[in-house]
Amino acid sequence: MDKPKLTPIGIVQAGVLWSLATLLAWSFTQYLMPLRVASYWLDDLRLAYFSAPEPQHDDIVVLTITEDTLAELPFRSPIDRAYLAGKIDTLADKGARLVALDVILDQPTTETDDRKLIDAFNDFPGAIVVAAGDRQTNLTERQIVAQEKLLAGIPAGLAVIPKTDGVVRYTFPGRQSDEKFVASFVHTMATQLGKTPPTHSRRLAFRPPGPDRSTPFRIFPLRQ
Image (cartoon, rainbow, N blue to C red):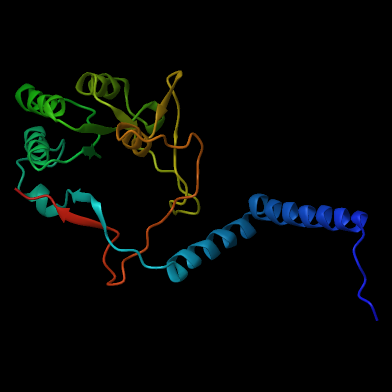
């Protein structure tokens, strides 16, 4: 018996049915929360257990401020501005192309230490990006004024990380803040490196651990 052949009309009908089924499945995962959460978890499992290992990235270094770091400083908060200035000068000497400081500078310390940090920003031969807050992140008017004074002329990006189901899964391009668009911390970094980041939120491209289970990026705690 000959197999039935699809007519042109049948092909169109099959295409329409396939599109409707795809749209319906997408709608269920977007608007029915249990299905949407399940979709997130399945994606997480796929990334965690089925992604091919990648070697450790050799162009990015993460320097962390730990409890041991704070124990060496004269006070915990605000973090010693002269200390931060010294680390930025060290990175300049080592040839860093960009320094992204994930510290909110929302209040002054001593005039001398604040000036050292501002001078370190301005003297850095590469690109500098500093994390910033706004009214939507609950900064007070006094904090906003102090932040604007400390970061005058310095590229800054919003330190906001949206989460879905308690997990960071999407990029954050930025948002309207005080009647102007303010880019996110990460997007500002990309711009300072001459890249053109997307203007809309996108799924993160997670970098899996290396074959030796090494971290995606080199991580070192800051010490004196």
